[in-house]
Amino acid sequence: MIKAHKKSPKALMRRSSRVYLNDLNTGKVKTLKEFLCLCHDVTQYFVDLFWQRQDFSARLADLDTIHRATERFGITTRLAQALAKQAKECVRSVAKRTPKRKPELHNHTATLYYHFVTVEPYNGDAFDFAIKFGGSGAPVVLIPCKSTAHLNSFLNDGWKLSRTIRLGRRGDKLFVDFLLEKERPALKQDGRVVGMDSNYKAGFVFSDGQVVGQEIYAKIQPFQKRQKHTYAEVKSLVGHALKQVDLSNVKVLCVENLKCVKHGKRGKFSRGFNRRLSHWIYSYTSRLQEQDCEEQGVRLERKSPFKTSQFCRMCGKWDRRNRKGSKFLCVNCGHEDDADHNSSKNLELLGVAGKYGLRSLTSPQPCFN
Image (cartoon, rainbow, N blue to C red; front, side, top):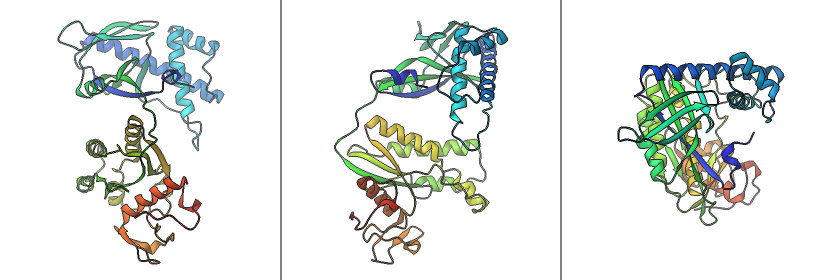
């Protein structure tokens, strides 16, 4: 299923900026909440239907399926088509997982295209945008909305508002996710290949000498339990650290593929260490890196983390005795280095060689001073 913004003749980047609707009157809040509940029920109905049929294809729902929802919930055909598309995306997202589990929708969100909503500048000084709902099954409501510093930073940087928004509910608060688009820059042809090693103790260590995010470890240590505010603090620190990275002379950034790094590790760590380790948010960090590289025309490559911290790039040998804590000392040739910097150099080596893992390399090995 191809997204609409990916059909554009120009390659586009897409970001979102959330704005909470705190200035609505009681009537409008009730109307939008009822609409979100309806969208939730219809989407879950389509999810159950597609799951029962084991339909994991990228094809849109046929008209017979759409009409079943219109008759059952009393909605328009266009709204049913939009919600069926969202349901198909939810079902397809679990198609390759093992084991497969039917998606259960807990959040109340709805992606609304230009058929249902339009965003215009507000005619006045009190608000910045006017969101007009109405038509094709959406309630007829005018929502005034204030901008935020986050949204303004995108607009000032040349991003354009998309005609699609995402309406949602978090607790008792309603929000709108504005979708922004910008033409994607071409990938750099000149520059160097750089490796990056990341962990919650040393932060982000690059093979070109850059080190950021070292203060995150000190922040994580006093956390007594997993709480929402602790994760929010770590996310803020990670985002601030990655903004300090200079990628101006980098054409390829090689990072470790940590998607399944915790697989099979259950019960092997103490409760305290596992609590601290859980605050190093791999998926969030990876998403920020993808966005930064995309905006700067840098190609991001993920490499196998196998033995990258124990491999000596000088003699091409690895041994588990090479690394002790934060120190690297090769027992074969005597090469000495910081363990994280050595790992980033090995990732750079994989990027230059065009290999996924160290097992694919053949002797003799190139050296990087």
